Image (cartoon, rainbow, N blue to C red; front, side):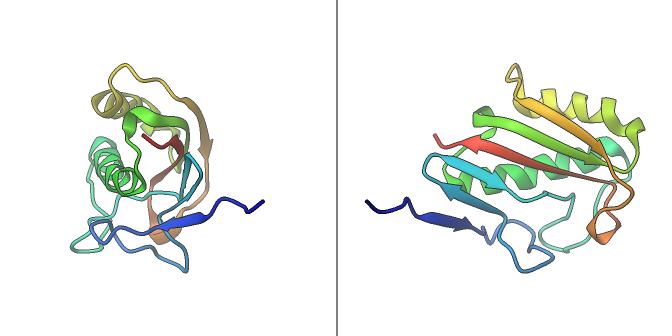
Amino acid sequence: MTSAPLVGIAPTRAPKTVGPYVHAMRHENTVYSTCILPIDPKSMQMVGETAEERFRRIYTNLGIVLEEAGSSYQRIIKQTLYLTDMEDFNSFNKVTIEFLGDHRPARATIKVLALPLEAKCGLEVIAATN
């Protein structure tokens, strides 16, 4: 019996990763993302003056990764949100509804001291494929 292959997901439309890893890995029917940051794919700069702008960029980047992996926002099973400022929590909820509608995945929120590139927030997900 052979093991199911692991497939690295590294869409060229998404911002480049900031280290030696891919945006996500797909194993069988499950996608595991890295921590998606609010980076503009063209400029490779952190974007967003407000928390809502940052979260919209994160979800846009995530959508690119999920699509490449054969998944979608509606197939997210679990989200892990990383915040340097818990005051941004309600903004994340608002933007989540914009992107996920009535879909309600499980979620953990973790306050951190710092994230790569001095990002103020990041999001990783586990999702099922379509």
